[in-house]
Length: 506
Image (cartoon, rainbow, N blue to C red; front, top):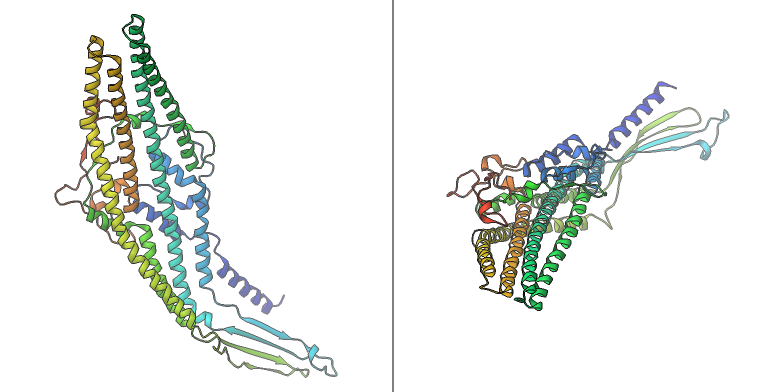
């Protein structure tokens, strides 16, 4: 093999490697996605493990499952999230492709079309041509590719953040179902005692059969509610298992302390401070801002498209007498008669105007979303406080007084059952208020773009890496999170003796 041929092979190999080495996301991409999540949560998530399938063989959790463990497993194994990591590879490959220049064209003619000399030597000519427009537009295409790669990073981080919120919501739903089932079991015991008392009075003729049947029906309905809540919890547990990437039956259970603990209600920054934080941390708003920049780059690229296609090249020829001649070819210029590029420029301007208007609309919507979510959270928190501090203690006192009056014979069974029914409806409404509080908490986290511990954290510890941000609390409140302990869901006097937590986590 001649040295000249070896040089051609090496040059071609180098060009192929430099232009096609885009099989995996870059380390910079992975670090960017990880930082987007770490700025908004307290999770130490590494998207690189998803691309390498490092957590695919992780065993299924057993025993107790905490919220943090469930979130980390979902972020490491969720099948939809793993599939989305390929978007990072695609965006990186598109960026590499945007930096490439159009390949030159090599042409050659043999002597079949030319006369042979007496020595039978054919005449040969060869030429090489190159389009220059790809060189002119390469910087603009690379800039657009970088912005699109950053958008792919934001989309990946957004999906991971929403998955974490979905796990949080599902976990709180399971906690609520456990509490509801425990409440239903307590109500069933309550009606069981009423049935026993009714049967005893029925034997001595004090109570009528319809009253006894009503007590039995109430007891059967309470047992039916227990069965329904058990099925609902099993369904929610399977859904949580699937979020974590497991299709088998759950082998884990919730910690009893999570079901028994009284969720605190922490103070929050004022609405304006949350709106400022949302404009700095909402990933969809950051992505919309990148659309604006993409519109500007698209206009610049469209303007470069107004330049007619220019082709330059060189040609070398050898005749039958072994005479070699060569020189530059004439420059080829495409005549922009039918497609001068003005339509593409107008389209780029229209897309840029649309991106500006979309960003303005979303920027205003962010503030509206925060105000609505904050109002819903305050209403839910006020309902929980009212039920725990006022309504449930009063209902429990009414039940105790009525049970005493029923035992003394001052009231009949029908009156006792009415008091029980009213108490049960209030307990169920209280559990609904608790679930609404948790749902409003997750909704507030989504519209602000921060998890709860990040929202309630002092402002010096909450700043995004991609943009400058300061989350200030209200002037009348200290920087540290204030937590108001609330009574428990079933017995308010017992709940007030529980230790107070200060992490602000509902």
